[in-house]
Length: 207
Ligand SMILES: [Zn+2]
Image (cartoon, rainbow, N blue to C red; front, side, top):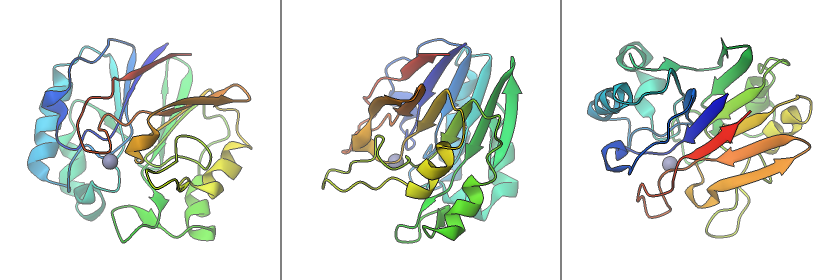
């Protein structure tokens, strides 16, 4: 299965210079700049023009409309499967998606580190093969421009109890790239750079 990973397009999807074909397109959140419904609509139209048989989308900390107004926002994504603390099986591969990240000045889907966010990670099914979250775990693609490691330690602890093939996330744009530990590939798929230019290529992973 070929998985094409993108994230953090922030309403600039129309400026992206080509998305490779594959079986499953994964978007790890921040499809809008500030939860604008027009950007959700435009993103959905853009998705509809891509050839992938399956398209999975989660929300990120910029996508306020998906937290505050899910009844309006979620049905707009007619060209994707929207995951919010939920799973989908595709050709025997188990995907799970969740938008939460550690608290940072009351953005969307923020939760306090420790037991509050840990409760969300404890929902991830043990048979998950591909995990999609907006934020990175600790130690993978999580170094900020100011050299802080902003990833979620609680998430990493739960990942250590799983047998993931792939974890896709974004959020820390400057952490774009891949790492690998114990057979799990970690992909920070941020399409936008730190300066919000949508120029980082999609990351293609075969599992
Ligand atoms: Zn972002």
